[in-house]
Figure 1 (tube, helix red, strand yellow):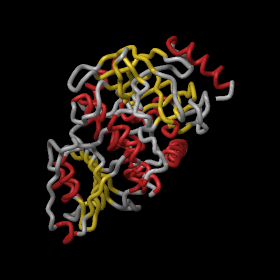
Figure 2 (figure 1 turned 60 degrees about the horizontal axis):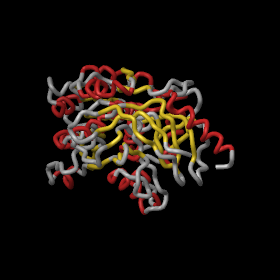
Figure 3 (figure 1 turned 135 degrees about the vertical axis):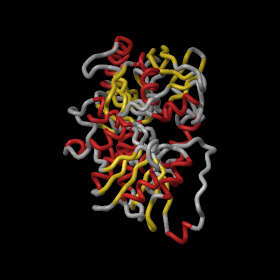
Figure 4 (figure 1 turned 120 degrees about the horizontal axis):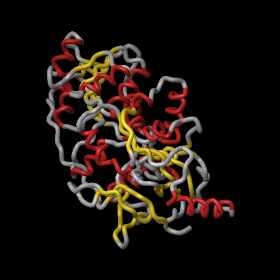
Length: 394
């Protein structure tokens, strides 16, 4: 297989304008797969990279929430085959490190270090702009026509799942529902969610599916609050109009909620989540702060109130286990994906998509890169070549 030219969204440096560029994508190597991207979600974490709040190697191809079609296989790939429809996860667990062996693949040492360094397992990347090396965001870089990822990042999905809905499983849905599914939520309990963007809305869905009787959605965006009610919130709080902590305490008779989630990534709202849980309750931090942020809490509350403060990374994801479960919940109507999607864009409109997200327009924006049955001219010849190669035994 030969390198190919693709269109991709590139961040040259922190704070600079993103660019739609033609870049070179190398063929997949051992245990790697090339996927033609059909749809990619727009996530706040992409924005954190653009602003430099999440310092990762640049220049970088953005995007980490995508779905598409398998086009070519490297040596040793058995998990998927050419033509499979797949969701791409941004933690491709190695299955061998301490954390993978302990049943915490979301904390995989190799996957997370690779994301921080912006390289594949062999310490190189498959993306280039001439002689300039480009780094894929979280080893994915899904805001592009095609990607090369490890086979462990991929999970097959059914043919009837719309691309734009499937893409959301790769980050927002897995992160949000996973945080709720792993939290101590039992039927009839009370939950608060601070921050109702793509992740927070799916925490709300997860809490509803788990049987929470009362779910408080806290967000300054009226659009997000409205959508939170569609997805299961029983009460909404505008933090610009009312104090969230006092409101939650008032609604719960000064007891506090059983479980509170922070999905903003701010030390202030992390402390707020901890303050609004009852004695013996649990606060879960899901939002991603800047690496040097610190949060201040009352130390006496830990022993005297037996409160628990914990975190959730990628919703505790085990992709081979969780993506099929999410698909089943979607097929049964319990997991609602279509209402999350409020705006659709092309690759050339990603700058607008980011601004729409930051302005709090509500729901998820999705970039549609290829139609369900079409083939981009820049990919057609290479796809035919890869199919012939794979028929030859790869």
